[in-house]
Length: 88
Image (cartoon, rainbow, N blue to C red; front, side, top):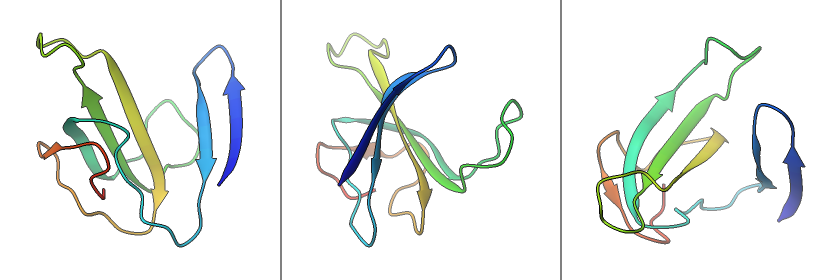
């Protein structure tokens, strides 16, 4: 994949660009959003998007969140539990 690390005042993260690949979850978690989402505070859209909440300590608190955007299809639904490497 092509990787583009970035940081600005609104977000910090790493962008990965894939073409014609199966996209998988980076860790165990629960799908918080799955579908076509247009954020109110952004220009444009993420298209089909999945956001997963990850609780590393099983203490009920979200330790980190992963987002997968500009997808061509979805294999998960909001509220669904996913495991590391689950196709999303």
